[in-house]
Image (cartoon, rainbow, N blue to C red; front, top):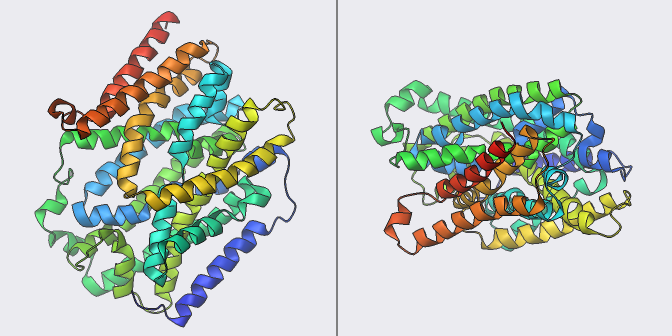
Length: 460
């Protein structure tokens, strides 16, 4: 794309300066574990909503890409299912998490099952929480805007997204998310306003669309839809949801916060999907990933374009910083600190998390450089990992007093994972039968057998 105008550069520079200033405003470095990890468990209702809404929406470029290619299907696979599972999480899970006093999902495995299954769950969660797909998204966006090399853009994406976490951890994530929440909505309100003014109202636009873009399945099978639907159960084992529920002031704040977040997600989904639908008849793109930035280039004036770009950047960065911190927490605390012979020394926890932040950044940068597809990666990870973790985790909430052996838990995690990966491999080497069933289903079936066995054994 062409050079940004000087005013757009000023807007972008002001945003980065403000973000770093907010992140470093608390100069005192926190070494108290609960302060560093959960902000002292004092997350207020407003902050809870803002940080959850922004963190959950990092794949913004993928939303534009999918809408441009498949139309309203985006809402049916990336929006509606998540509302349902988020609602269930708010009612049944979030208040219980807040009451347990635990810090992370692997804590449930350590407490209910044992050290080996706890470490195994943490390793899998590292893959689920890797910020690599979002670092890749931001890196590609910066490359597109500034015409710089991908390697440089990936390094900049990582650096500016996590530099302020080092000092005060979760508090810095929450403070910066408040700014990013405002920019997130403002940017798309501006874009859809200019599109409406230039191209007519959304109803007229929808009537002008080819019929295939109004197909809820987007031309795919019902099985494909249901896999995406159940992948939304990722919500139940999403460490971002868990961390914010654990950090909330009260169980009621966690419950109401998620319910309110669903409303904001619905509003934002409406804005983004309408913008993507406008693009279908207006743009001829070689790479649909740049649907939203290209719309902004064509329809936004100087200054407003810069404001929209920082909105996109803010959405992605808010996810990178949160996932980087959770990944660091998982690597540093839930693995290295838990298996360390000095794990009784609570003062070491923050040190291990900061060490984990460095490791997470290196791993994420490496993965981002070699990953071919953001959406494809999310689909694959969800298909093979969710079946191995979701029911064992929920069992710790359903049967909190019923201890299960470490060996049983390891089998419960491992076998669904193994079956899903094996199924995925066989489908890739052209075994026709295996291609007809997505890997998610056999893995989930195996996990359900373990769950029912445990339920019968407990006499429930």
